[in-house]
Image (tube, rainbow, N blue to C red; front, side):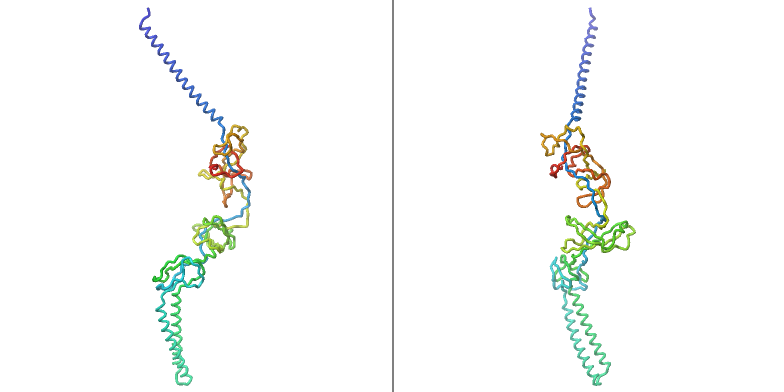
Length: 396
């Protein structure tokens, strides 16, 4: 008979073997399914249709640009002052309104002249008496009844009293504050009846017919700066206008600390568009021209790693399994072939004028660059080139 202990051991061994085989099959199935799933995912992504991105494009252009020296200028009026009295006094009349246009010599403010008028009346009376005395002395001299010394004293007294009259009239004239030149007044700074001190500002006056631009350029550009050289000016206040003027003066001394030279420009301003105190961009234009390669500013992608553009290259031949981008307006039922493949190219930028910028390095004049829609692109993206501008939704 079979030993019971041996039989029990055999049963335990069988159960253990069955469990090991079952566990092996189970874990093998899980591992196999995971590997199969991973392979299917890899196959899906490997054969997934590549999306088409709709963009607009433009070929880089060779242009002739005039050589220019750019700078930032501060504008000031050809004449501008704070109108102030040279003597103290109380304001008795204000003859202007804030913002008014005035002509040279036009009275603006009248100070109290009651005291001066009294002194003037007294001086005129004294002068009248002195003239009578001088006439009498002259008559006495002619009849030998008077001395020449008396006549000289009388005539001297006439001159003294007349000088006193002129002095008082000058004081009265100083209390009538007039416009020193034609221009536009600012905001009134005083009130009627106010006592003002000598030199106190009453109102600002600016002659806006001509605007001067003060700016500095590097000494290396000194050879390009000559009085009479043409200038162009643009301002954020009038982004669609370009003002033309000329260089009026170049400082004879260069700042030893900065290596910069001060320059003054002159711009006609008949409509008063430009205002003193404005910051503006000026360029000293030269007749010399240079050939430059330009692209639209909208084509440039700015980043800390460097500026770049997307250049259109020929699309790969085997791209039949492509589909339009989800944001494109191309119908999905009609799957088009890509027009090109986008390649991100690093570039070096130069001067910018308006909506175009110079590309110094990285492009040739045969390259087509993406001008809108590049936010959806990455290196190697397939694109459809639209002949029409993209909407805001398509460009994002």
